[in-house]
Length: 377
Image (cartoon, rainbow, N blue to C red; front, side, top):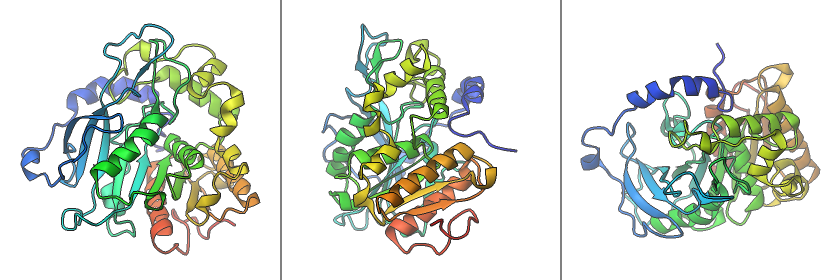
């Protein structure tokens, strides 16, 4: 049976949300006493205010949740906001390397790992989804993994428009201008682009490509797993428009059942709400960013993965990723491109992540993940 993709699970999500909420696990007993999480020297900095910092519920002692508030989530816009206060807590999940406490003076690389549509800050760490702790165990990546909240349909954008409740998320500002320097201020990181990578799945794959293309001064490696690549495509616009109505600006459970978090209107209006007028889209669209040479600095540390080959699985996403691959080839940007018969599902994305860190931080694997064979030229 096919598992629903992160961008197409809304009906099931809404049908089971209340039951899941009641069953949500609490923090493991004694978690605070067992915590090996470091104290944070600059908890309130770069526009962020720390509310709590503790071991993530149900996770290892090396994985912590930082609950933060920021004026970027949410910003009043278009009228009197329907929520008070407008600023709401937002979580960032952080996985530390096993030797972090034993060698506190060592600078570590950082991987920013972005979740998919209708997902949340927990997606990459759930054992039946990303299972990042197990996925990276024994890999070439020995660093810090930062998994930030990005909204169920935030699209990693600073929304120029607003929800029906007159507020708007500013996800790019939160992630790029606030979170990156906050992480560097509080952890032993390589505080330059050479030490940072960004990767993501589905909507998060679009986010990774967006951030990498728009901020090459911040990152030196990028991985995109079944990513969105072209917001001009009618299928992409239909999906984006539907997401702004179905889950809107909700964050985990915040606003999920509040109609004021949604965006009503036709598809052009909803697209403009998230991305602004079409004249601004080339600067936000991966295929255009590639043609404009915005990925040139990632040569040799950029990787694309998608199923859909042979008419199976995610055919539209596969075709879009192939188009981006050809744009990069046309601009002479060395990159890894793996594609084959595959679905929009986690059993494909976890091997994608393993392959990406081997490629970006170790030795390029001889073959692509998921049994796809040799890399596509």
